[in-house]
Amino acid sequence: MKYISTRDNKKTYNFIDTFLNGLAHDGGLYIPKNIPRLSKVTLKRLSKLNYNDLAFEIIKIYTGNTFSKSELKKIIKNSYQEFDCKNVVKFSRLKKFNLVELYHGPTLAFKDIAMQVIGNMYETILSKSKNKVNLVTATSGDTGAAAIDAIKNKKNLRIFVLHPKGRVSVTQRKLMTTINSKNVFNIAVKGSFDDCQTLVKSMFSDHQFRTSINMSGVNSINWARIVVQIVYYFYSHFRLSEKNKKSVFSVPTGNFGDIYAGYVAYKMGLPISKLIIATNENDLLYKFLRTGIYKPSKVKFSISPSMDIQVASNFERLISSYYNNNSRKISELMKQLAIKGFYKISKNILRRIKNIFYSKSVNAKNTKKTIQLVYNYNNKILDPHSSVGLKALEDYYSGNSKKFENLFCLETAHPAKFGETIYKILKKNPTIPSEISKNLKKKEFYKVLPNNLNKIKNYINTNRLH
Ligand SMILES: *Cc1c(COP(=O)(O)O)cnc(C)c1O
Image (cartoon, rainbow, N blue to C red):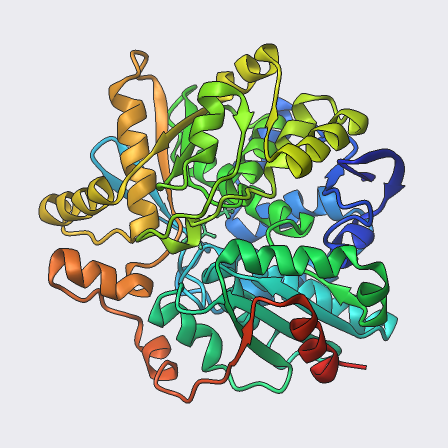
């Protein structure tokens, strides 16, 4: 498998380059030169596998010979052995809708599914090469916790996590800051998530700094995360699809990583008829689907904070795919975005995007109402992100005349992660798994820093692994 950057399709890379670099040196994102299309026979064979074996088959396609067969099997097994259900994800049914519970990992959000694998991939790669790596990542709340849990106590690695101060829930913060491990550094930045992401991107584009600290990233721009997330689209369809029906997935969306993985599954031949971009009040992708104009504005803080994002980084990968990986065109669009603050795609491409994508923006009132209704009628507590996803799916379903589809909503977090919000709506606290609640009582460690690139670089430089 060969990779290219969205902004330069001449140079090729292998999986390990994409993995260790995160972001390409030209500022673009890594994408496969070609996404392989699986045959009907292969799909049929894969449909019989349990989660770990399916993950092995899919990840293997993208990692090539980076890991031996036994290494990759071990990486997957170690990653998922502490999940509290047998096959990594669990399903539940709500009227016509299938909910895919993706939050059975150690930090209660779907990000554990990819991040645990990434932590073990790092360990396997670094133990062979004797390299040392400093990871720097921005988080809107869930990535940080998942990354810290995956990286804590691992050799040859340090992790620096930037979160927007006061903009993540208490449980989200504690899941990051109560981990007392010598290789973990939490930084609370006085700013928004987009500020944190901009700081990390600036460090990545500073070639001198980046190489001097041997910097790597685990943000959702890391190609390996996308690869690991492809698996549950296949698994959900294989387990629950009814005969010959295509599947619809509603995906609570921020940085466009999760839903882009669904798009890759679609390109690989999984029968998906729609991918629903479910957004909160940060509705730039909803507006994009109406107008063809991609225009970030100011972040609005919502009750689904992990989606309070106005720069959907992975979207560049999707646009690249629709422009047949024409990197000159993508560079041009990204330049327009940088200079004018927006770009516009052609009518023809927008029409093609709308064949497979649908979008709905769900405000706080409807998010709360959905949580209340699902609790009243089904005695199930949805977290606010998943509620946005379900409401968008209901919207799609009610406006859609052909009802011959399997309807899935990805549940991206456990409601206990957003206990304060849930309490305000239901006057009830979701129960948190006892293993986790015990840890959250421990002392917190984090450093507060201003939204200032040099100050943050200095802090990282002082504490990094040499
Ligand atoms: C990260 C996150 C999202 C958004 O996922 P993207 O890949 O950034 O689109 C949605 N819900 C929860 C709970 C998250 O943690």
